[in-house]
Length: 312
Image 1 (cartoon, rainbow, N blue to C red):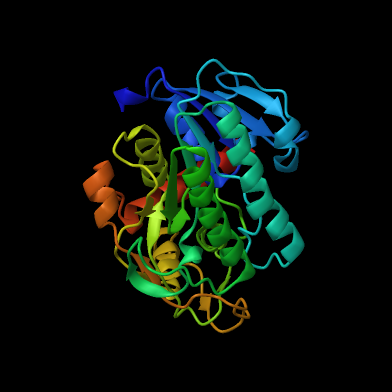
Image 2 (cartoon, rainbow, N blue to C red):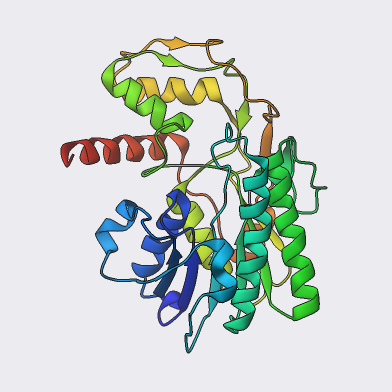
């Protein structure tokens, strides 16, 4: 994507799973990246590009007083969030990070005169449903989803009053290399490679899985698209797969040595049982489509896992 050349992005949450994928994608296509990260943050996901981005130390709640001046900010990309682990249950921290932290990020982007603020939201803002469009009512079923929906509403209100150009990007079920080990696909890959049982809940949950590199591409397109303003955009495939079928595919690709044990893990309270998105707006406005099939994405995740294991 040559249009990323000479663009400058400020990124929060850059060391996380999706944030780091975006940073690697942007740097690989000529963009400049400046990240904001807490003291002591683990940069292992960015090891391969460690000398190619600048870092300012600071927590989300400190953004109002952070000492940062840049001559140009083409997009302020806000990934940082609490509660991605759905079993995280500290509601006060969810509000402090996802709502108050987003307000601090918006204010900093405004102070830096950023051309655009790209808020990375989540499909959890919608709640359950299939082929969900961006104009679907926000009906989250968890405090995590509620705080992320609150962040979206706050960003839109801030934009209306302050004139900051805001775009909200809502990825669906993202998976791929560098994902946290407790998440479904990396857990199933690790168990499958070890020939160990893959233990899940009922497995009947239905998801719209999207490979992480495709999502990074979609976010980059949102950063530079001049016709997107004040909108939400889904990054999804529009296709569904059950959790059971997903782990079965992993088990087959790792040698068919693992038994899948269902109904041995408790379901997460407030879990969405069926969710998928409508990808039409992303296709029309961004020219983006999720091109990586589930089989290919799992194969690439297994390959990455094997390489990571070989290198300790």
